[in-house]
Length: 152
Image 1 (tube, helix red, strand yellow):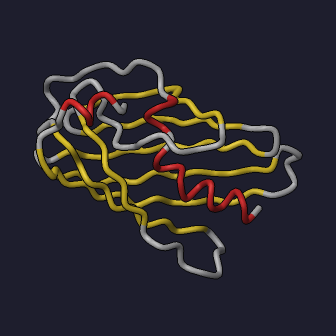
Image 2 (cartoon, helix red, strand yellow):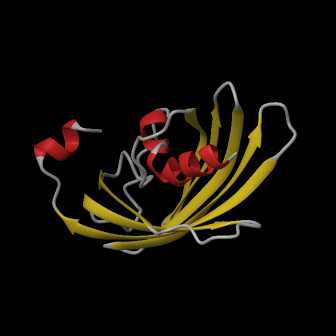
């Protein structure tokens, strides 16, 4: 299960590349650009703190979920909703050894956002599971460049 804990630490990075086409929302209070994200992970029952995770991504109105791709699991966004400045989603991931499901929600405020994602990782045989909570903070760093957009 420890191997999967570290895969989960990278889960912040996996949702965007696995998601289906998103709705765009011109009313969300977000400034498009290259954003830096800092995530603090709390593992329920974890004996040791998980180091903060840093990631960066070009965020546009067509791609408002601030995650990047980096996972060995097959993941996809199965629901996404926009309500005012709030963006929420539901995530499902799996491989031959585990299943992971969770929900996330962030609130944009121009050039910053705050939010959280709650995930449960279960072994495929159903014997063990672990719950994690990701606390996310993001801030716009600069405009996106053509290279940033081509990597998405």
